[in-house]
Picture 1 (tube, rainbow, N blue to C red):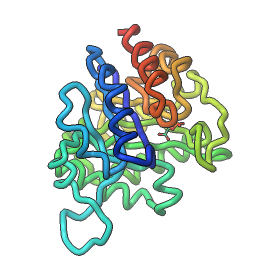
Picture 2: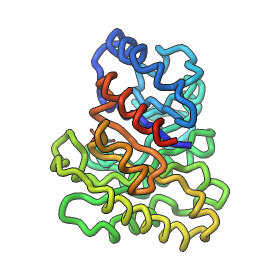
Picture 3: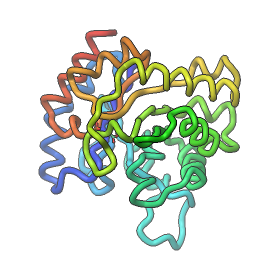
Picture 4: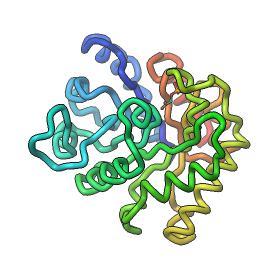
Length: 250
Ligand code: PGA
């Protein structure tokens, strides 16, 4: 199974535009062997009906189940809206919402408890040492996560410097060889925490400036099990091309 995950971030701006974009990409979900997940902003989660071929994911969750937490959204609400996935640990939430590994760990536990599969992003910023950052983030985010739970997590290697938009990205593409090294390193850390058998079964995907020209190389050359797409997921034609390029590999 290859994952194609769209992170719409804080786009588009109206319900009408979100509906149009969704209608334009709905056919992508019909490709066999590809699990297509769309992660729109919260307000749009309920406007697509119950799509059969495309799965829904949210871009955040709160770590408490319910109660006096102004502005927060619970896992149960997300499940009720039809979500199966939730993005966690994204560098933009670390940057703008001050999320630490401890907070991400608490959210990860709540997501798993609610039956939402976490899409856990980790990656180094420009100038940071890849191995050091990945080891620290994995150890911190996975604290007290069991051997059963680990199997539901999709790990994303997303070097922050390779993200196409935003102020933290450099726009410099990550080469498949570098993504391969990072993926192998992540498997090594996960092996240390959970053993070789589970580590080998773990899904690791790549994120950061993915487009229709490079998407397949991350599967073929970097041995990733899918891609997380930001900017290019807002362009229906480009997103469909990415899906086709992945589908041609299977
Ligand atoms: P990008 O974003 O594809 O626009 O680089 C990816 C992400 O931040 O998830």
